[in-house]
Image (tube, rainbow, N blue to C red):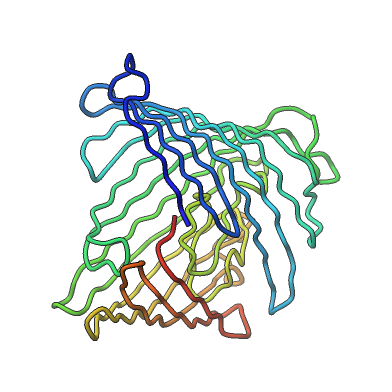
Length: 315
């Protein structure tokens, strides 16, 4: 359940301003407080405060390999150019105060909070005709980050050996177009790349897998045939294909095929061992409460099929 409070013109001396608060009451709750100020016609600036609490698990052939507990507190100060309702260009600086504990794996994560910060530039464009069961339109999301963090000592844990930085770029492009009145095709490309020799903190890796459209973090990436956040890597190059058929009133079926390379090592990025492919079929119905979907999927890296059930919209 998502509860929202929005107040416009909170302070009379600050016109064209908006203050909003989102409270997500869920297994993984969050609180978002946003303040924005419009300046002239196309420009705005503001600040976002986000508090997330998330649990994520990773498996290898049904064996639990990692179980993450994440608590993230962030402050985002930004300036934004909005040429029209479909697109925006945003530049900002973020301070993250993050606790990320792994209760199973041995990867150097400590039960402590760590401070990270980054600068980012984002371009976003969307003119899709629906939130779910899209029939036509584009979605483009391009982001570059410069992440600042403490160094890593010889034991693999964070230490005070000096401030380091690494660049992370991420791009997601999806095109959907109709074929007749009942069918549509989707073509997508998604890539992510770490630039620089320094390791990226675990919190900023790409977490790939599942059909989740989680909007908590921008580095959680869906992939047909894998469990949710099945892979955590530094480099990805993914292609996505889907055929959607509206076969009866509000009932839909979708056949999906995702494929690509994902690896922690740049030298092994496009190695055959880094290739992952998955396919699946989804049956869904569009309701007043949002989409209800049932999916079955399989990939070349899992010995068993993966199921997924979605009810309602993603917040």
